[in-house]
Image 1 (cartoon, rainbow, N blue to C red):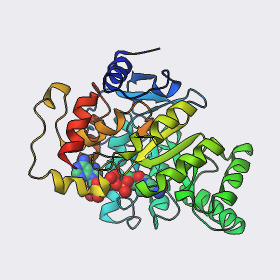
Image 2: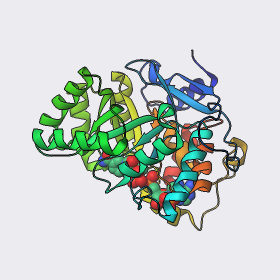
Image 3: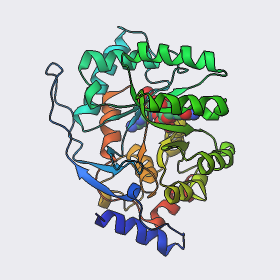
Image 4: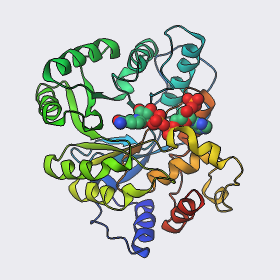
Length: 323
Ligand SMILES: NC(=O)c1ccc[n+]([C@@H]2O[C@H](COP(=O)([O-])OP(=O)(O)OC[C@H]3O[C@@H](n4cnc5c(N)ncnc54)[C@H](OP(=O)(O)O)[C@@H]3O)[C@@H](O)[C@H]2O)c1
């Protein structure tokens, strides 16, 4: 089904002269209400984020909400600490606001252990589209790491297993494929986090055709839109966006800047919502995974997954503002 949002996004890109593949499954989207609250003990109501846009994973057509969550930094805290208690509330806001996708990695210190405990204690695992990574140099280390990931995440299987930053990909990718065949992961992917890695990521995406790629894309680092994102759309590869806030640095850059005048018309009330809306306005993008350990920021981030997308002209205005 082609929605008005698809049309607006496609029309604005076409108007800017960008070559687009015919609308692929990954650009199909629907607004889905968040799941009904269940499981965890009652707590103060989560701020309403409204229905989140969901997009299809091209490999299967399975839909996931466009706003996911990362764990780097923000989930690296001691189990049972005061910050851990705050994370309990943060994750509740995320799931009750309709979120599903969490991205972690065995090399974010103890973030995966914290996430595993929070999913378990809150009863959220069944709602979670859980993504983690392989980040090791040889087969023995990868096998040990995967076993440890299962223990720390408190789950036998994940939804997505990605090769972290293409590390030892000649060994890691066949291993990920084996785990997929065994049912330990539903999808496999390749990640990178800096623009200098995009060419190699694109080369491998074309050669190996993973289900997903994960890459950085933000108003101050928009190069992925030149070739990598259109290629992913052509190939039918799902795309996760990391570092949409440039690790938080964009907030310092935005401190003395007012939101553009058109923000309110689109229901955009903060720079966080604007930066995330920028990421999901590219039609190749399946979801963006901002990390936060704070409930109010989590609610703010979810709001970016509702309403109209940005036009090409609005995207270009933001790129110029943060160049
Ligand atoms: N190679 C890879 O595979 C790779 C590389 C990088 C990232 N990633 C993934 O992508 C995720 C996102 O990237 P990232 O964590 O590096 O950076 P990011 O999402 O661009 O920025 C995170 C920072 O923004 C702050 N923040 C979040 N929401 C906010 C809001 N609404 N208002 C103000 N500040 C806000 C967070 O602080 P608070 O926690 O204090 O709110 C944190 O300092 C990671 O967590 C990870 O899962 C993967």
